[in-house]
Image 1 (cartoon, helix red, strand yellow):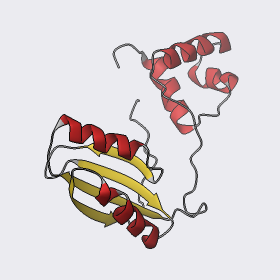
Image 2: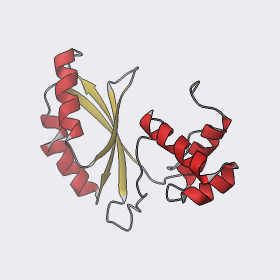
Image 3: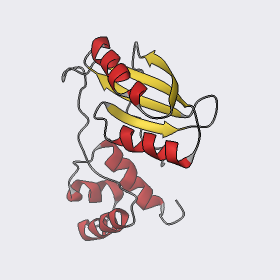
Length: 154
């Protein structure tokens, strides 16, 4: 974060909590004029410090109450197998996040489903059919403790 100062970090911190804040409100909270705040916002966006804006939806209300983490181990760790797996995962709507990790398995996949039956279908009809998938381990979440953690900018 060497390219940003204390005020930029404050702007980013406020935006993490409320992405719908008006420029006027934001300028008042950081102690700058609306024009100066707007210029900083344009720069932060242009330089990629803000990757996007969106709404946090309630998965329970929308029928996606089952949160599942899946460890995936591949049979080979070649660039071709990694690329094939990554391409397929990017296209899977149930996959919220996927991370290549170091350790006893290759990927940690975060998914959302309507219920355990929908997860079982995903596993059998999609995940286990992908080239290179050797083994999976499933962790169904019983309770979400914290799922909206902002970056510690201040």
